[in-house]
Amino acid sequence: MAHAPQTFLDALAVRTWCGLALTALGRAREEIDAINVYPVADGDTGTNLYLTVESAATAVEAVFAGYEAGADGGAPSLADAVRAMAHGALIGARGNSGTILAQLLRGMAQVLAAEGRAAHTGGEGLRLALRRAADSARLAVAHPVEGTVLSVASAAADAADGAEGDCTTVARAAYRGACEALAATPAQLAVLARAGVVDAGGRGLVAVLAALVETFAGEAPALLAAAPDGTHTRVDGVPGAPDAAGPAESCADGADGEDGGPAFEVIYLLEAEDTAVARLRRRLDALGDSLVVVGGDGLWNVHVHVDDAGAAVEAGVEAGRPYRIRITHFGAGDAHARVGERPLRERAQRAVVAVVPGEGLAGLYTEAGATTVLARPGEPPASGELVEAVRRAHAREVVLLPNDAELRHTAAAAAEQARAEGIRVALIPTRSAVQGIAALAVHEPGRRFDEDVVSMTSAAGATRHAEVVVAERQSWTMAGICQAGDILGLVDGDVAVIGADVTETAVSVLNRMLSAGGELVTLVLGDDAPEGIAEHLEARVREAYLAVDTVVYRGGRQGALLLIGVE
Image 1: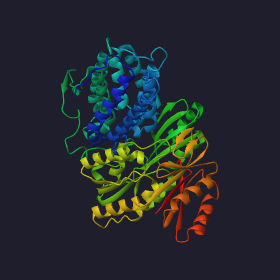
Image 2: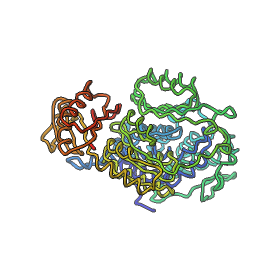
Image 3: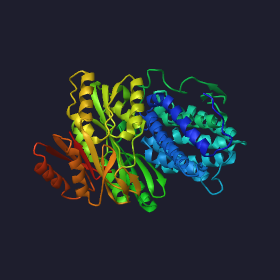
Image 4: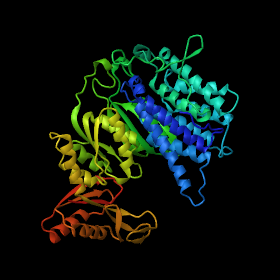
């Protein structure tokens, strides 16, 4: 669909580009996943690129929302927008290609946010940004390989270098150069030639550059494939892609050839100094392959394939503070094996997918059979991440527990997308992890889907929820004015108690909740909860509410000091 073209590259153009790129990757995600054979044939490159851009787009939208909510109602500068885009991509980068894309966007931001370019830029600024993007991405990869997204990015920058004119002219040149390079990838990388496909990461970058052209031209360009004589023809699908059957019969092994390659993919964010990261690169390079380390200014995204996942994480601990750690086991006969030899896993009839706020609860939910999505403080999952979890559950029917009132719309969008893929999804609007625990306790996969959903919804709805947190700033609440550092007791989402002591505030909250009755109290302790608080609250319940039982769980780093549920 055509839209009003952007004359310059400014904050609004960045916002438009992110939105169009997300839409383009959403349309192309499945076909990109289908041709993903390098560096690992795990069929997730399209999904990883989508999640990375979704995080970037969300960060840019947050910047615009912040300015719109301000007293002067101003708008962000180009520097504000590109820094948000780069940071959002960095913290949300997924997989090998997503991590490289994050560095491409960071390279562009370094040029576009430089002094003198804070308001807007034209074709010259865009050329310089595309060149910095390609060069910085290549430097971030330990062992660059031609025939990959790096080749496509370099070709786009080379083509842009030779273009004279405005942003539209430069973007079109970069796009055409990327299409030519993409079509050439099978001749550069044997694994692609054997599978009869182009590079999946490069295909994703072409989609992102097409969105850049659309931002300035007002409409999307045709997808081009380069012919041997240098001419271009429009193709309806992916240039060099297999038929609808995909590469299943023909695609070959991953990055390490016939030996199968490492067993684990390890990704984490890392807070560390530059000197420590240099040492980390050397250590991880000795441990495995597909090493990509992107970022800077104290925050890095680390991606590597290894056999010893623990050693890769320990290396991060030695370098600084790793967090948002994700470890994926490729498995025997899975990602590094020939796709045609993979055993097909039978779909389960029903599964539960739940968002959980801490590692402790993630373990509890997993033991109960749920597929979990970890939501760390200040880092809510995006809809694409929830869709990915629904797919990972590999079931015909899925019950989705968002466990957070603010995730309602995100979860609804994820459920709608999963339904479009043929999965029956029921969204239970749980507002807290303790409501999710109550729902999971009555879950019975053997009964009819509708009956199970009604039972779980009823159990969640019958559970009042509360949390004890530390106030971050002065603000008005239903219980009065709180100051930064005060202890707040929230009941069903509203501040009910303001106190100075965590345990005393928790007791007040518990008394308010149990005054309306109850049979079971669930306490979920955060890492920062004071010692002995669980024992104190259990004793209080025994003394004052004789017929009420209490269960205690360790939630880990969950944001709240304490979660409370009363059924």
